[in-house]
Image 1 (cartoon, rainbow, N blue to C red):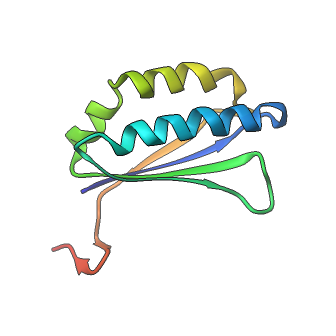
Image 2: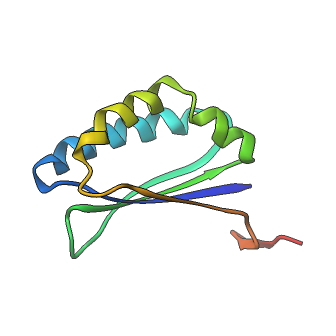
Image 3: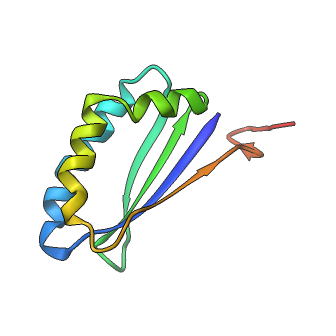
Length: 102
């Protein structure tokens, strides 16, 4: 498995447009064969902060995701709505779900 966590802060005037575009991307991502999870979260105390939690079967599945039409359209649509550059971090599993990875 391969995990990607993305922190995003958007300009307040673009929050609703960002949500719409991001949910469209999330729905497309969930249809990808290599995607296991795509959660879109909004911070409770700051409505301009979002967090994307993505899980893929493997690193290659994530690489394929970054070539999809829905991802490329999302990236282009939201680029000017960011209040600061988004922070995407990639993780390998140690302990997740109901099992420990050895």
